[in-house]
Length: 218
Image (cartoon, rainbow, N blue to C red; front, side, top):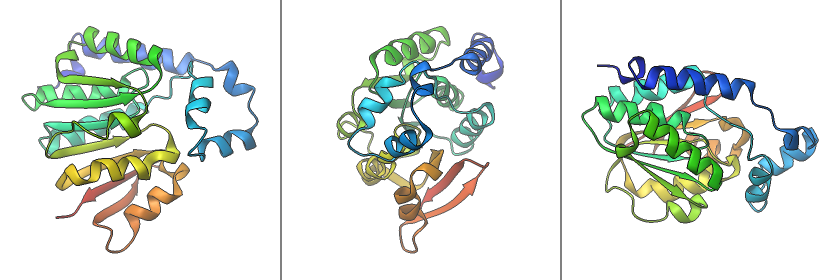
């Protein structure tokens, strides 16, 4: 069984990827490259920055989406946490894996209300909304409580400056062998230093160009 390749999810994902490819952000175009780099690394201005570019889709790539599904399926994941829902493309891939694993729960966090609403619509259209809890707000608050006792997989794909902070929130619930996938991790050097450090409790490796894949050691 592969929910990714069946109705109603397969054509929905194709449509969403096409919309994401065509999307533009006039607000982002108006921010210089230097200022963009500074804001992406800021732990105090991230809400303002991402609010300004709220029309930007920021999805995972098609290959990373498939990778998420593959990792969740191959590990038999039933409890997943996601930081950065955006319009829900990555969420759909992860929820499809939960469906094909026999069920489970995906908790995902997004602070932009319009994206939360759109993601919920897409999950309903894909027939996967029963598996997903979308929490609206700053992930430093929304993911600070109410998490599963044992988390199988964590996706980091929100504000890059917060990767290490979100990991610290979720870390006590990561089971031995849990996987952490950080998209565009090169923008979060403190996170990379954390998971790559000897004795950190993680085995970590760059993967697929713009992804860091890590495993929580026992």
